[in-house]
Length: 442
Image 1: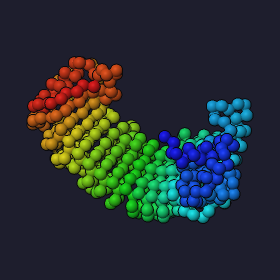
Image 2: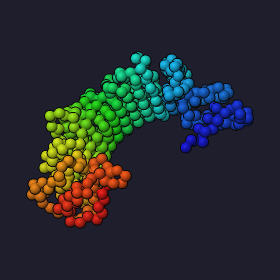
Image 3: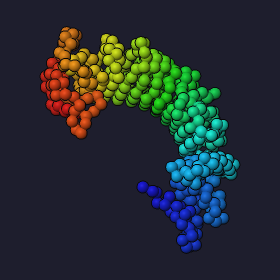
Image 4: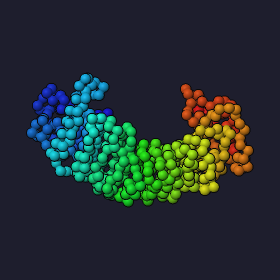
């Protein structure tokens, strides 16, 4: 919903000829701080345009503590409306954007910024494209910077370095999509003493960045990496509380050590190496989704021993090999005394191979809910592995809820799993659970 202040300014900007002079004067008579607050809800281009309203408005925009800029605002038509002169118009739009940013920064009052938001598309003809103006913005001590850049060039981008030395910055989000290779971020120095939240998307990170990051960000509480190439071997922080590694490719054996981490989400493509978790005693919510692209290499997984305090644990293993490697980690596993909900998903027939799940059940005395999502293999349903009963001889007294479904979900409310496989799964569960309160098939 549009803010009333924003609606008022749009009326001034785009319908002022229809308004009485008294209406314009009444708004313009408001105190500077009120007008500045109102302008902060507009885009930077719209805020600057108010300078033509009257002498009263001439310099109000220059004190607005917000930069909100999109390069598409400088094109006379949307991309899908392009005619034969589209390429030339795009070139002119880029030039208008660059001139505007230079003029804006040259004429803006030297007051601190609250937030900076920029959406920029770099076209294929911009071989020397730059976002160097970001360094000038960083000197204005913003508290929040959000940058979203897409590129048709296929080349990595050179990111300015002063962004990583902005003492006032509390929130930094950068998405740098080039379509082919991720942009490598290797600043000379990282000194962000106030930074609490860092979000990076479509970038390539190396050991030098990781080491500088945790030394130079003593207040960092939330780290989110999306679609990143991870070429470093460790994440170590005494203050980090939330870690998200979403659809990232890992090229090193990585050790994560964060004693105050509360939430961990990993969706990792293992290109090389594996993952070890150590010193994670504060973890409450854990989601681990693993895929493997190692060829003949076998990943090293050391996870379960550090998840003992989790209240919710979700595991998705993309191949049977990953399941087998995690089973090797079971001797390192102690009881999950706080675990209330367990989700296990993977591409194997759990009705036949229940060993990993049975081990987790045995070590979770306070479990309330279990969700099992698995893959229906081709061929006949097999009897459960005989070594399971011998290795994990126990029976769980009661589970409130058990949900069973296909790893890829159902269709129109119906399970993709055959009734034969569902019955086999229920039979296997009956070996380890005396009573189930609510059985849900999806």
